[in-house]
Length: 263
Image (cartoon, helix red, strand yellow):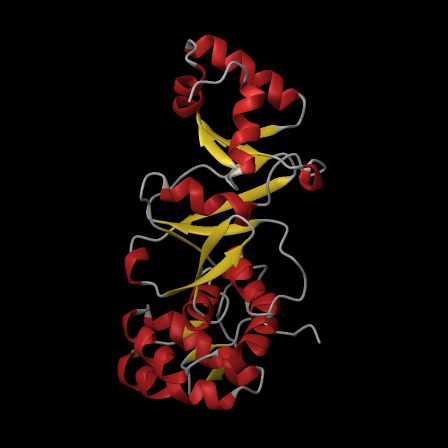
């Protein structure tokens, strides 16, 4: 079907429950030149009716999200990646939020991807990307959103990522706080299976932190793996000196940071 106005096209999409499109689609629907379509889209964006989180990709912004200047990230990230079949999953503090383990809504929506890509700023919506070459092996769960389904790392995968990317997760205090709440959702058998392929130093830190927040049943799952694979002591905080600091013998950890959880 051909449309004479870009506004009519986005209204028709929204009426069918679809809130995203790309530049080629609307150019074809309007039967217009690319420059003419670009100008029409610029007018709609100026009115706050659409936004562009990525080059050539547009979202329709309904009235309830006009103050954001964009759709919320969870409502467009699936469509952004599904259109090219690219792998992704929401992780770290964003994933923790879906399991009720984030004490506050993260200011940035955190997404793991197969290859490095630029972060997104769309209105007041921020999306940060973290590259993970082993993304295909990370188990995910599907969560419904008003615009589709979002892939989120499982509680077990989230826990492992948190200790691997502490700098992206608010530091050790935040990680320990999240782990304390996340523990009740963790399947210990699944955690043990995932831990086998994770860097051993991550599992040393994870076991130590689960002990630290009194989640001993979960930490016990990891102890045999650490006993079998850990050859060296690992610093609890990888970016700090660990000279002349106490050691934890169970987890072979240099305790070079104090960790306090937010109760």
